[in-house]
Length: 88
Image (cartoon, rainbow, N blue to C red; front, side, top):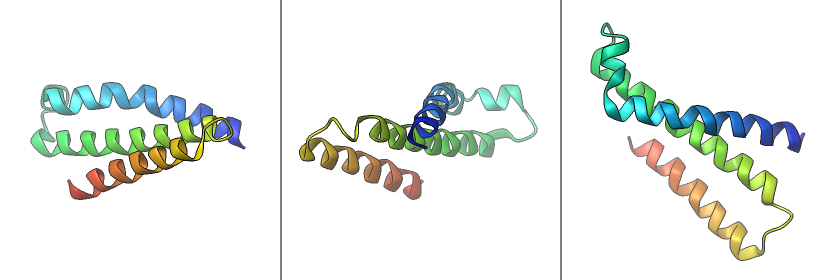
């Protein structure tokens, strides 16, 4: 189970990079002119969710090797990313 989560989160991280680029650079307007500006927000929302999934998988990979302080820092990163996605 954990191995498949790590692989899925790796794929999510790979897909999140271009999604951030497309969302911020405004390329969604060029690629799909019918959706226009709201399309960029949709792509950025998807990029944030993919990044959140990548963080969870990274924690699943390192959960047995990190100290409690590292686990707490990772939990704060996940909560911060989730809050930033909810705020936008």
